[in-house]
Structure formats: structure tokens, C-alpha cells
Amino acid sequence: MKHVIIGNGPTGLVAAETLRRLQPDAEIALIGDEKEPPYSRMAIPYFLQGNIAEGGTHLRKAHDHYAKHKIHLIEGRVAKVDPAAKQIEFSSGERLPYDKLLIATGSRPIMPPVPGIDLPNVHTCWTIEDARAIAAKAKPGSRVLQLGAGFIGCIIMEALAARGVTLTVVEMGDRMVPRMMTAKAGAMIKAWVEAKGVAVHCNAAITAVTQKDGALSVKLSTGGELAADLVICAAGVRPNIEFLAGSGIAMGRGISVDNQMRTSVADIYAAGDVTEAPGFHTGKPELNAIQPNAVDQARVAAHNMAGGASSSGGSLAINVLDTLGMISTSFGQWQGVPAAEGGSGVERVDEARHCYLSLQFKDDILIGATSIGWTAHVGALRGLVQTQAPLGEWKARLLADPTQFMVAYLATAQKAA
Image (cartoon, rainbow, N blue to C red; front, side, top):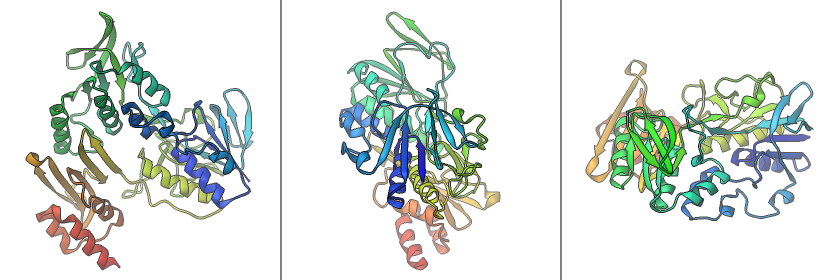
């Protein structure tokens, strides 16, 4: 059996290692298009902060790990998938056959289509090469403008602030982390960040970047103009699927997969950020680019590629973020559902203590939660969402006092047992 995996990030590597455990004699090829050993993009901010060396970003530290596990690392960019011939084609024209194929090509940063976005000193922060360039330029006192205050943007912001730069963040949404936090929670994070010395412009976009007086001049949709020595784009990501044109693989915004991570083409699977997978609550196709889902999907795909019968429970939002010392989380359908669909919710705000809690229900099941400032037992929120346990009388208690979520979790877990 010959397994080929396109993409050597955490998703691809977990799949390769799972396949090796399940099929000791199979051939396994793991393909990446960078000149680096497999590494974690989520570790890049820690490298920027100086907390780890480049080697600390590597997914496996032992130099002989891949040889020991008989995982063949290949550097190259895949340009085409040919299901009829059961081959992939590299940009060099070379072809590689497969019996089972896993597409784990992840995402890439979105660059806004504005004049000057390709000027020197305008960067994304997505690869180790990006991080090296930023580290060389983001010196103490440097004026840095970051576009985007989503989940990834806030992690990058943390690293930049640690480098002592003068930082300005521009976010198109009406709040920080708009795809993770409620309006009130996002506003609390914004106030916290501004108190730490970071300027934040919401409801704003970049309209042009020009060179002026030896620096960059960034025009905003709100009419302002900001000077910067360095501009970093963290305006979101989109799945890497363009190379699949003509393959016959069904795609929406990402690769369409079922709960077994099967695509529409036999013997081709997909996992991770590149997929549009059934949602945990809705069962409808969702893009959910977070590592816990990606790793779960990798294991499911590997088991099925090896002839097993594994199934994912569905893509679930699981977000935990540290923003300059403010811990926030969101799980599941944190934004809630309409009352006409059985939705209800409760919100508790304590701005003086920088604490916030939102619980969202559908009938008597907790379907989503958002928190700020809660670190003790916060996993119970995820547990309540993920188990979908009927709360019964506990729903009324939580609506009256949402801080009792840990007690509710223990009570419902005991009842279920």
C-alpha cells in the first residue's frame, strides 16, 4: 500500500504517524513545499517573541524521527492531482503514484487587493521565512501596523508587543476577534489592548500603501493616514485548493468531505484547514480552521485510508486565546441561535474584574459559550457543549447564575454515567 500525503504540517504529520502505526509495512510519502522540516505555524509567534529558537517550531525534534518511522519526506509543490491515473504531478512535471491520497494543504494568508500591498516591508506572518524577515525589522520603537485582529492576528500582535514595537492594529470588523467573540467580549478585549498601549482601529480597512519620507504611509477607509516602518497582513486565510482544478474533487470554499474525511473521488481523502466538513451542531459544511479539529480529522482519515471505519463527530469551534494577558475562550455556537429555533442565552459582565461569561442554549442543551477572565474549570464549558447533555433543571439555574457551569457539568456528567 502506498500512501501519499500532500501537506506536512500538523495534520499531515499526525496522519502519517497514525498510518505508520496501523500499517507498519506501507509506503508513506509526506510532501511539503518549504525548505524546512515539518513545523508548526502556531509556534511562529513564540519564535518571534524570542521564547524559542527556530528548532523549537519543529513538530518533531529528533533528527532521525522520519527515517526511524519510515516516513519519506519530499520537498516539492504539487500542481495537479490525476485521479484517473492515481498520480499527483509536481510543478517540475515529475509524477508520483498513490494507492490512497490525503490532501492536507491547509490555508494561506489573504492579501487585500489594495495598491502598494506588494511593497517592501509589507509582510504576512505565515511561514518561518516570514518570521525571519519580521524579526529583522521589528525592533524596539519600530512603527508597526498590523491589518487584522482575528484569532491569528491577536497571536501575532502578542509577539510584536513583546518585541517593544509601537503597534497599531486595523480591523475591518466592529470589534476584535469578531469570528470568536460576542460584541461585548470583543469590545472588552479592545479596551484591554488599548490600555496596554496598542492603538486599535475597528470598522476600518486599508485602502492603499505608499512609500513616503523613507517609510510606509497607510491610508484607511475611515479617511485617516498612518505612518509605519513595517506592515503585517493578518487579514484571514483561505484554503489551498486551486491546484485541484480539473481533478473532479467536489469543492465549495474548501474541499467537501464527509465525516470519514472522504472526498467525492474514490481513494482521496482530505483533512484540516483545507476541508469544508460537516459541522458538529448543524451537520452542514463548515470551514473551521483550528488545530484540534485538524488533528482529529487527520486521525480519522488515516484510519479509513488504512481500511478502518472511523468517523468524526463533526467540526466544532474550540478557541482559547491569550491577548496580552487577557485569557478568552469560545466554544461551539457561541453566537447562539434565534429564539424561533429554541435559542436562549445569558450574559454576565464584570468589567472591573475583566470578566465576562456568555452561555447559549438550544432548548435545554448548551450549544455555545464565550468567556473572558475565566481560567479555572473552563474546560467544563467545552465539555457541556461537546457532550450535548440535556440540562433539565440546570438550564434555569444557569440562566440565573451562569458562573455555576462547573457544578452543572459535574451534575449532568454524573447523571449521564
